[in-house]
Amino acid sequence: KTGFNRRSHPIYQEEIPALVPVQFSIISHRGCVGACTFCSLSVHQGRVIRSRSEDSILEELKGFPSHPDFKGTVPDIGGPSVNMYGWKCVQSNCAEKKCATEKLCSGFGMGLKPLAEILKKASNINGIKHVFLGSGLRFDLIRSEDWEDLEYIVRNHVSGQLKIAPEHVDKTVLRLMRKGQNGNFEDFIKRFSHLVQKNGKKAFLVPYFMTSFPGGAGKDKLIHDFVKQFGLVHQQIQEFTPTPSTLATAMYSTNLTFDGDSINVQKKISERRQGRNFIQGNSRILKLVK
Image 1: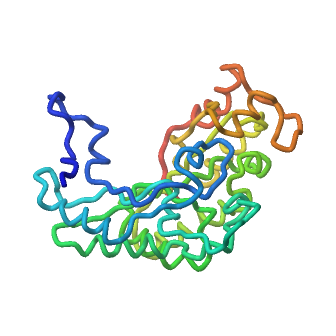
Image 2 (image 1 turned 60 degrees about the horizontal axis):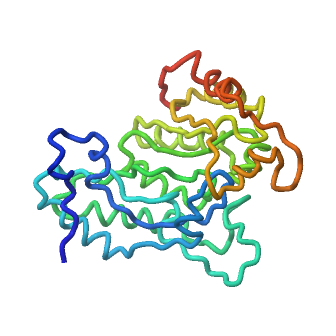
């Protein structure tokens, strides 16, 4: 069989910057058990996690050192919501299918263990110097028993930035997003800060926020106040964009929640830019989590 040559097509004479972070990255799984209203991932990849075996991933990695472009660093082993690598539902015929809407269902007991194990084994391959986690973590799905594995990952496989996606900080908006409304972002920041200080690392938390979400009018200021309070990097911001096959797009179009309640939806460009401009307009200084 013939594998990918991990290079751009010969037609391109100049280097392609977008190829650099993915040239020697590994896809570990597909699918997502989340049901976020703004995301179509579960529609086109499914709600069932399909993980590659350790043998498959490690076999692919073993071929990297012989590649003429490989310099010893694997930028990422991951996929959608990288926490979910190796997850399997132990229940059957579940009617609710709310695996991670409010909290992580007890049907998933794997946590970060499978991810930590594959990163550890990848690092032991001859010719590989560094294996980093470039994909983002769902902080709200990290349980107390996962922190030992998270500490290992941060200590050994985070190059300096850990991506997370809280999306918002207002509980009402998070409920409409069906995303981490019961997660304690403030507590996670403090525990992460303690973790990096304990291990003598300099590491950033890079949160991903979304503004102008249906029903979130006037509440994006809370993001500004939050990032200012904790000195967070706040460049990863997206204005909500209607996406086919998502519940949030239906909310955007109808001005109704999934419960049938009326909501205020920001549709004018001037309205949609307010939240983003307010968060990023005053300061673009990147700070370490302290």
